[in-house]
Structures are given as structure tokens and as C-alpha cells.
Length: 328
Image (cartoon, rainbow, N blue to C red):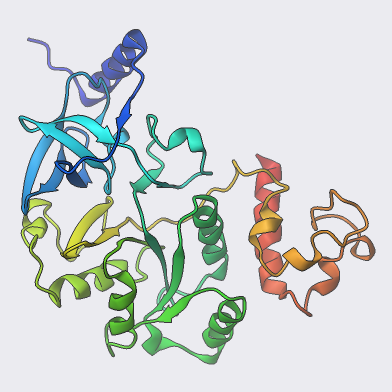
């Protein structure tokens, strides 16, 4: 008997996928659905009737399971096999949202599905605060029509420099929260915002996403407290997206930290609409197709507002995104 390597097995699945030309069908919501909490190459963990089950994908789907099913998905089971997938209300992907992706074969850039609220977690220090990363996540989440809040974590380490950045996002009208698991600042408010929602924590490595998740899990009576055992969850850095139910109807999806967000699939002309302080000036430029990029300042209304109603830092964030899209 010849042992098929991991790589060969994947190639065989891709070949079979093409030969069968299977079109995925997503079904309407059903009361007997199970909630996907974690996926891997071969199997998934799902939550149903206060129990966790390790399941596989029905053979009618010639797919790698973690490229079809994601944390937050609702599925139908038969003999510990996923036979159907419930239609999704949204997806979070590290790529531009495309309505055709919502209920079709996903990609490894999809992080989670069926999200009520996203929490962009950034550390005010350790690691250093990077507002450009916040801007990119705002674009991805608004593009996916997912409500969000910005959580400035490790607030016990804040200095005047970080306060200035935090005040900027507050003045722009974004919903923000300041938290610290050391002083407990903001944690009660965070709980209130997350109650009765499926929420997702996103952000760089080391900003404290898992610490906030642990706080919620350990401070509440968790009916699914064996999730930690079943999914081998510990205190280490998160390596894949996982769903945790911390109260009835209240779930958190903890995601791996990522180093960069690629916005290259966005149209260069749409980015300006995601910078809300640009909006009053977007249509006041001399030329209708002005990108506020390499045009002369005397023709660009946005450039004329830099250091007035638009900060230099936010403009530089915008400029860098446009530069990357143009280089693609």
C-alpha cells in the first residue's frame, strides 16, 4: 500500500474537485444546526445541545475542510458528518469582500463567518501602537458590512503620545473602548458590548486578544468550558481562529495575530471613501477623478486640509495604501 503524502492528498482533492465540478448549495436556517467552533485539515469541532463533537466533512464535498468551513458557520450533521451548510449572513476575509464569496467555496483568507460585532484590538504599548493597522482593518470591516469597535488594550501603559492617537479616533466618531487586564479598566463595559452577540477579536500578535478572551471565559460560568480541553487551547499565541461560547448566545472568535493586511484587491478610487474626514472634501477637488495622491496641492481639496481638518498621520496612512494598490 502506497502512503499518500499530505501534499499529494491535497492535489488529489483539487483534481477530484475539478472533475466533479460540484456547485455548493447553502440551505436556509434550521433549528437543528450545529455551530462550528474550530476547523483543521481533516476535521472540525462543532457545538450542539451543550456538547462538543469532532466531525468530518461528507464525502459529497471533495474539499479540504478548513477551506470550506469556518468558525461561526452553522452546519447540519448526520452521523458525525457535515452534510449541509447554513446560508451565511457575512464573512470576514483578509481580502476585499465580494458578494459571490459569501456562500461559495472560500479561500484560506477567510477568517470567520456570521459575525455581529468585530473588536479591533490594539495595544497602546508593548507592542507599539500602529494606527495604520487600525485604518486597514476599518476598511476591511466596513467593506464587509461588519460593525466594529476599536479596543485600545494595555491602557495601563498609555502615554501622552498614545492618548493623542486615541483622541483622534474618538473625534472621528469611532466607537472606542480602553481596557487593561492588569487594572480591569474597561472590562465590564467590554462584556456589556459583547453580550448576546457573536464577536470576533482581530489584531496583531501580542496585543492581548487572547488575554481578553481568557478574562471573559474565566470570569463567567461557561457551559462549554470543555472547549479548552477539546481544542487543546492554552495560554499560547492563537494559531487558528477558534470560537468560544462564554455565555448563552454570547460567543467570541479569537483569531491569529497577523503582521500585515493586504488591500491590493481594492479599487484605487474607493479607498478615499473609507477615510471619513476626507468625505466633505472628496468632491471639492478641481478634477472629478482626483485620488488625493500625486495631484498638485492647489487642485486637491483633501491635501489642502492636511494639518487642518485632516491629520498628517491619517493622510500618510491613506497614501501608503494607495501606493501599494498602484504597485500591484
